[in-house]
Length: 281
Image (cartoon, rainbow, N blue to C red; front, side):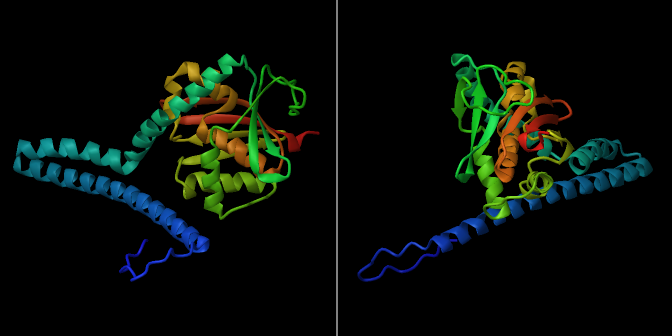
């Protein structure tokens, strides 16, 4: 929080304290997360109150034969069930997140079309810089089991989910490097309990393939755009899933190849399949 002070007679520029600014930024991020979680709990509490009020109105209306109370209960009980059991966050987050990523995905789709690139993305850690990962999209798919981009026709791009990846780093407190299983568990913690982006995510590892199933995906509305799903999402993902591949590549220092992805906008379930080069025999 910025503090206001009375100006000095001869004001001088205050020295920049990077540590203090970083601490304030971290405190602000923590406060934002607490506010979001409080709002979520209040919505569910409101739902329970609606159900209780609706049941009370139904009972009183039945005893007094007052039709107005029965109408009130007919409205309150379904609303309470919606807020308490489902909540409005999944719908709102799905709609907003879906709309916010459509433009970025369309831009990439146009770039791929202009460059005649049809292959699936490969995420490659930058040598000598463990904080950087580049996304390479080849003109055509690499042979099965291959992740090397040397001499392959295609272009390098900044990963779609790079800013989310940066948020992951903030969430865990900076640079991190773990084995694959710890990396996946950490990713699950970040996306569910940490940044509250999805309700749940489950990984199935059958090396060299990593499969992920995401429940109540906040980005699921992109499934309403078949062209984007087949043209971009299946080849490189959306910003959220794209950031997952970048995270695995970064943490393990190993190239990761995008295999496939699907999303269902109705039940908000998404699946992702990655090829992890560290699991090659």
